[in-house]
Length: 220
Image (tube, rainbow, N blue to C red; front, side):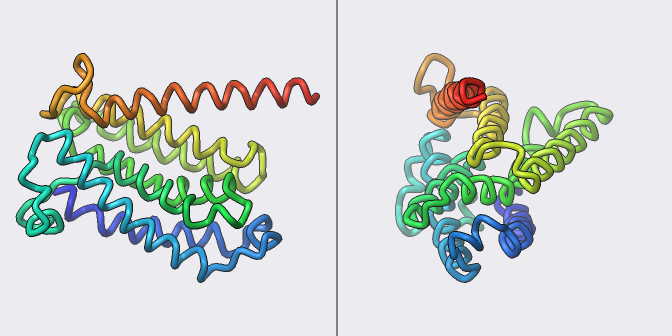
């Protein structure tokens, strides 16, 4: 199911990316052209899909999927890690664009663009099992958060890179909850490999955000 739904969501993400990039002041000032970004985005999506597949294989203990003959056969042998795809795609893009010296802004734009991937979690347990009112509340909360982040982005209200860290925390929390209700291999205590990564990135992001807020306070 997720393998089928992911492609329309990726299309929506690319449209959001186009809208955010075309008039961005910092990207224009840094002379970062749209074709350059989109070429690297498509490469990053490829990396994201590979990382998503690898993390799914580790989490599910389906080692036979590592076989090249079935690794890319998503129709008959489906299975992708949403969190792995987000991480792989974002950091792939950062790797390709790091020389442009606008890493924080690019991370914010790309994480906002791929924010719709969070909705994929709603098709799986426990989110798909919630009673009806809550099924409407969570999507509405996600839409509200997206609008808030988008507003911060447009007004330059937050330091470049902070929006990415907040969205990374969101993905990590969703992946942690998702992991407890879906079969996975245990790596650390009750955590799967991707849950362990999620816990690490939550801690890392919080530390960076706190450190940045303290620096801003001292500057004032």
